[in-house]
Image (cartoon, rainbow over all chains, first blue to last red; front, side, top):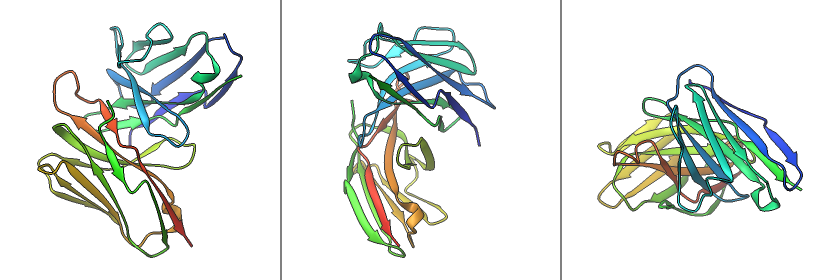
Amino acid sequence: GAVVSQHPSRVICKSGTSVKIECRSLDFQATTMFWYRQFPKQSLMLMATSNEGSKATYEQGVEKDKFLINHASLTLSTLTVTSAHPEDSSFYICSARGNYEQYFGPGTRLTVT
Amino acid sequence: SQQGEEDPQALSIQEGENATMNCSYKTSINNLQWYRQNSGRGLVHLILIRSNEREKHSGRLRVTLDTSKKSSSLLITASRAADTASYFCATDSTGGTSYGKLTFGQGTILTVHP
């Protein structure tokens, strides 16, 4: 099946710094990728839809200036958490849309101290 | 908006028993998908059922879909300790700009005791 990778798998950063998370589709081209966040023991919440070559579409309540998304190629989307704060600590998961299914990355655990 | 509701929120059973999880949703859908997530890990796609399908099987998994009631169920037969995980339903709704966007249910935490 299709493979989606994320890097890094875990990151710890200090409050006020920015963190970039990469999402790659390894064996297929993805014109659309999605970014989700998941708090402990909760479900996944869609943050934004990332479209190759155009601006991302953010869900209501998600700050586009805080969560910068770039989808520069058909195999790579990046999420940058700017000026991170402890409340941004979460599990961030990306997915890439195939023909019928979405293929999920393994997730990135962000801890902001 | 989060439209999927799942019940039960937690389910504890013995190995060999069957586990049934239910999911309800609110809008029209293209398909409904079930995923498994082991603690702290990514999602594993289990099964996809399209809106014009009523039942689907995959190994020990059986999924039903009732679009008139906007509900789905996931049955895991002859459960194993390795099935212990969180299970989520996710709906792919109709509509051009919504295509491909999944809305996840709250999930069911399944614990299978050896």
